Image (cartoon, rainbow, N blue to C red):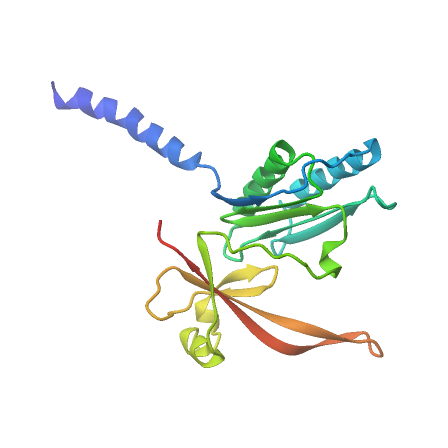
Length: 220
């Protein structure tokens, strides 16, 4: 066969491969939606629909990759929810991830009292109670593809050049995200966040503790 027709056939093939790669969905890591016997009232269902719609729509303009919302005012029909995108994720990727997560929550967990969905690039959570002011009693195991690590502050500062901006790869809902040269691990990211103490007399906040969270992504 002449080479010219072969070239003509190759272009559509490459185009198809590109379309497949771009259409690859966000990777789902874990879903937690127990208590699937929730008896919902029409008021709560309306609030829940409003909550998921608002979270999805605000994923396009959340400046720090984080947003929370409360739908309704009268318990037990109030619906609480939030999303958090990874600090190194672009705005359009954050939006696509949150849209996928809200759709998954509707399809897979319609009658759960609480839902937590982890994607590779974002987390979405909804509940019937105000979870961000209460300590969890039962904390689940780490998801299988993410390993949390603990190190002394000295090696962490050395790995990030004392949290240098040169090692900074983005901002997340919990603070800046760094790419450390960490003990030979190539797929590692570090989140540094500061706990704030509120001064009621002056309406100001001051940092009282610096903490760091190291996450190693396992090779697939």
